[in-house]
Image 1 (tube, helix red, strand yellow):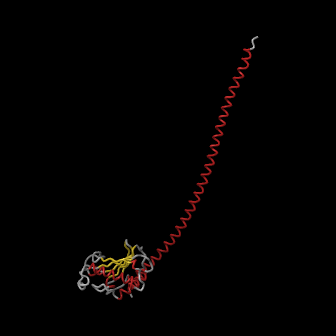
Image 2 (cartoon, rainbow, N blue to C red):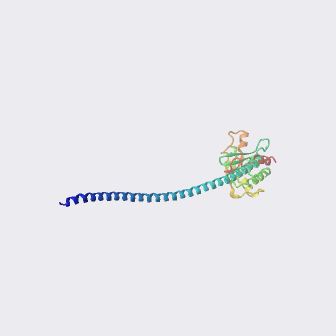
Image 3 (cartoon, rainbow, N blue to C red):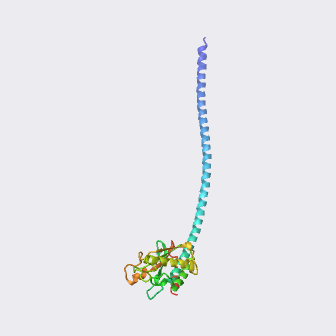
Length: 258
């Protein structure tokens, strides 16, 4: 009996079975290796996420602390601003009180305080400060300027002294002011600025004061009536950038009525 075919019939199936098992094993091993690699990637990703989470938490804490600090700083700044505004309001009330209802020769209020885009203006009619055609400050004008200087000294606002006239030409003092109203208004502004900075009881630093002369070209009242002319003949002291409430009317009124 030939045994070779019988042996082949027994061995070949066994070998075939062995090859299939190995292939499956390789497949399983490859799958396992891929799963382990993916697991390591996920593990590293988790580590990275935790690190990023810690960084974000730290950053958030810093932002919360900064926000807290800003809120505290804002409250402090608001308190300072409130106190600043309160003092300005007191100053405005005092300055307005120095002369807002002064009466010179029955003409009505000769000192007025009002607000413009440039700041707070103290408007002094020329009859309080000067005789007609003159740039020499009267005694009552010096008293008023002394009171105003004391108020101006309480703040650090810069001052601009503006001289204004009516439309009447300069006649009596034409020899002193040959250039007319512009020259007269400028001379009056210079006289007031000089008094505030050098002769008042509370001198104002020169560096805070400037002067301008406008003649008749910036009237407050239209027309040529006596009342309009009286309103236009004035010296304005402008507290530059001073907000509303920086001068007290009663202080101006009290000083101007003395």
